[in-house]
Amino acid sequence: MDAFYVAVELRRRPELRGRPVWVGGANRGVVLSASYEARAFGVEGGMSSTRARRLCPDAVAINPDYDAYEAASDGVFAIFSTITPHVERVSLDEAFLDLTGTRRLLGEPEEVGELIRALVADEQGIPCSVGIAPTKLIAKMSSNRAKPNGLFRVHPGEVIGFLHPQTVEKIWGVGPATTEKLHKLGLHTIADVAHTPKSTLQRAFGARAGGELWECAWGIDGRRVVATEPTDRSVGSQETFGKDTDDLDFVRAELLRTSVRVTSRMRLARVVGRTVTLTLRFADFRTVQKSLTLPYPTDATDEVYAAAVRLLRAFRLERPRLRRVGIRVEHVLDVDQVATQPALDEPERGWREAERAADAAIARFGPHAVSRATLTRRAGSV
DNA sequence: TCTGGGGTCCTAGGACCC
DNA sequence: TCTGGGGTCCTAGGACCC
Image (cartoon, rainbow, N blue to C red):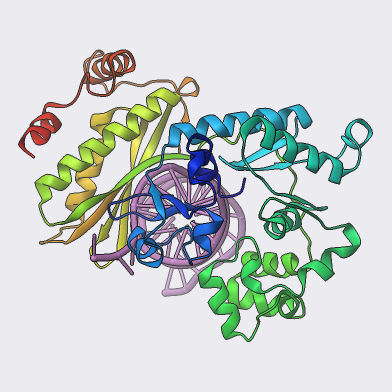
């Protein structure tokens, strides 16, 4: 999808069409999606909202509405599934479709691509771009070339000609750090990378990453389109404070709030996890993390919270200027795959049941139906 | 008032086991 | 007195993507 969040917003606010618009967080936030009109002013995704406002004061800024984007995404993926069952979801607004085998039924890939674009425009009112190529890497890069609202095909014989003139940062998977390193080696175009010995790249970037870089530069990509929904490997949540703080009581309350968010999502998804990671970001943007692995997987708010507090203590912070905290639970498993093993000295019924009851009440009466006393007091005093 | 929040994957060292 | 090779698990950090 092109400027997906903005496109969804424009459906319900058509009067904003043709104007600079961006979606993003107002307070200490960043731009998530910018209309092409806003991009003309230099506004782009990832940039701070402050900067975006300065670049284009007349732009309309919209707070994100993830439920709406998810609903639109479901609609788009429903369209994909009518084309082929071989759909690999990359994100809310991006997918790979394996068109091997659709030719007899639906015609040439270009025709299929245009069909998809027409269906998405008609049924969802959203523009999208299609890249067609023999491999995922080239298809992804073709779709970038196709934007906005276009289609671009790279035939097998055209891969090198398409790839080599482009600059290294256009490679999918090459970000700022790798770009800078490549530049220091004197490599600027993909052709430069291709004509560098693989062993040189491997020395600079490691055996694996270096080898992959060289293969990318020659368009070699053996990855298949994998239709199965990838199961989540971790569940996490983080929050940037309204302003930096050194109040550890406040931080602990935020950790509890974050633990509630993470574990209630885990219970909803019916997963449990063993490793709890606490991430801290300081006022100077330095970011550190500590993790610990529990003896058994859990989805209990109190266990995750207790682990987070232990990790916080392990940092031995003195008057920290904290900007953000985050909790992530890794190594998650389907709850049905796990034999629950209550600790020997713990009562069979306890927090687990209380949390399930709270989840049920929240599902029925809304997010404020039940909450921790600590958080309630906190909310009341602020 | 510079710099979010959801993730994945890789590397590297140390502990520990056989 | 010297000291292998293979493997897993845990922890910390970093790059990258949308």
